[in-house]
Image (cartoon, rainbow, N blue to C red; front, top):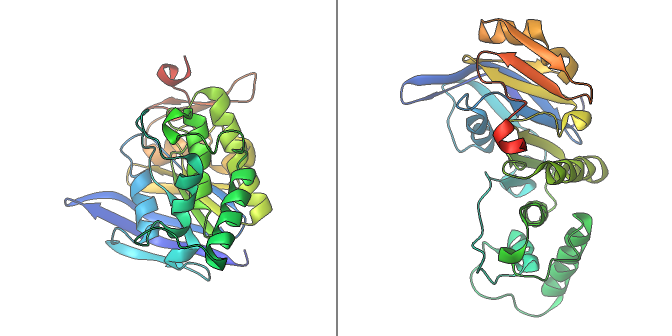
Length: 266
């Protein structure tokens, strides 16, 4: 566990006097792919914001190691919809990841040429060359998500935080974007912490999971955590974990199963 980028120790968060979760322990090292799982309302996005430093802990600690400065973190919040009439090009959206915090237009020169090269590298990395010069509003949901991931990678972060990047995508795009995130994790050496409601698209790529429920958490490898005994103990009710013929996991019981949603997958 060398090169630890995030260390969470006995962490807890309260919002409005209510404990969202407590006793969360986890470590994330360079090049690891970690998912935060659990049903709606359990505090998955809250944990991501606590790691970012946007929410204070009520107890425990979250430590960001070497490469944990804000500039070393790429963040993709929950999916936002671009208006179909928006004329900003995909490459311009990616470029905002480099200089979107500066006033005015970029000046020509060595810095601008380096930025253009970086944008070109990122567009190729996420496989968006064919549509990167189209208006972002004309791109499909999966294409937009690839461009937004490129934007989050613009400053070469060591840690990439993704809040439900597969939400509202159809199954083929879920699979494609999940594979892209795994590729970035492995080839670029970026540690990924990803909030997910459905574990199945990313299951083959995960190193570990943080499963939130009933105020607590279970952490470990998917094989250790996503089991009937572990989840039943976490939620305090009988839960079954079933494996379908194609290898997908289905969690059955209370609360809402996080792995299968007919309204999304119809």
